[in-house]
Length: 158
Image (cartoon, rainbow, N blue to C red; front, side, top):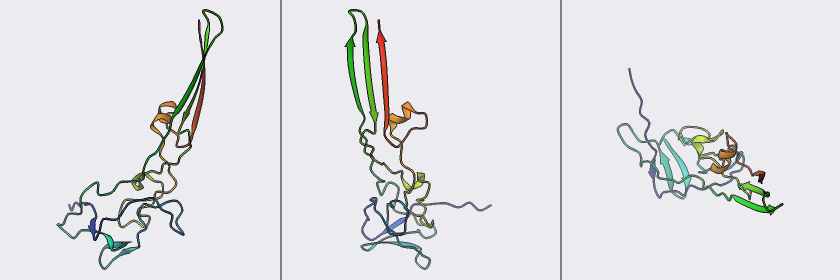
């Protein structure tokens, strides 16, 4: 029985910068604006003299964690007002905003609904259609939500 091994891609030339960008004809952002896989060289042209190549048999790629995925930016906000109804009875109102500025955080290509970190995949480097949920919204809603989540609460203490 033959077992295959998958290794990391070999970076040839200067290390390209992984950044979200829009490419005509592609739905959603891409991490790399890569050309098609050249079957003669087993490489994808990333522009500016940079290539990602499939290592030859027995060769190792450039290693793990050579690139950083799309950045993640989030702002959670909470407001609270305590109202004294009587000497003993207090009312507390809370408003909590998760991802308050509604910033889209795209998933890495391996988690995207359209996209792949596999060099031979036709959708290599795409991050389309799946936005990452904020950790704070996952504690409020079991599956988490990538968009703004607003929660209001009233608490009566007596």
